[in-house]
Image (cartoon, rainbow, N blue to C red; front, side):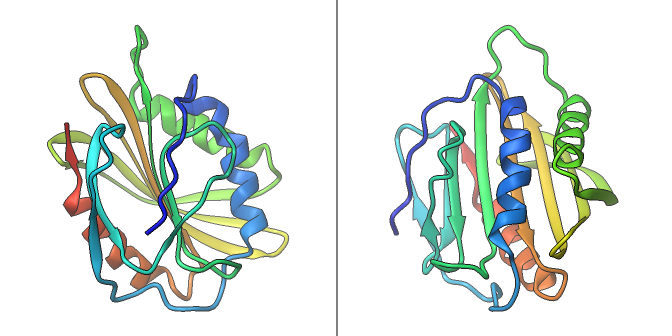
Length: 184
């Protein structure tokens, strides 16, 4: 698996518009993202270990985000997973403030975003909030799961994006990925 390493971003806030634009460009539709064999990723530069789908490919969106981004195929259509982080520094981020920035970033691209679920949940010992969304854009609809967690040193943003037709299978794989996360 070729998983790229990203430099630290000054803030995940700067990522919001870039991410939203990337989602619209990917044109996600089509192939299955379901039952996947996971392989452990233990990159020393990451503040976590994780297991990712074996056949997926690392991708660099050149948006300055720190973490791992993977897609289920080389070209669209593809399922997208991003496991990102940024140092907290002296900031006091909260999941609520980060979701607000994320939603505004998506809206700034011209897409409509509707929250469909929200729950408090922890992964790897870090508590956070996970929300599900439906995004509507000129090329159709996308579904997303987004989790924000605030650790001792970092803010984490873990995301899944796929079409409504494939989202259930992709979400099951994403749940397995999230269950494998261990923070350092």
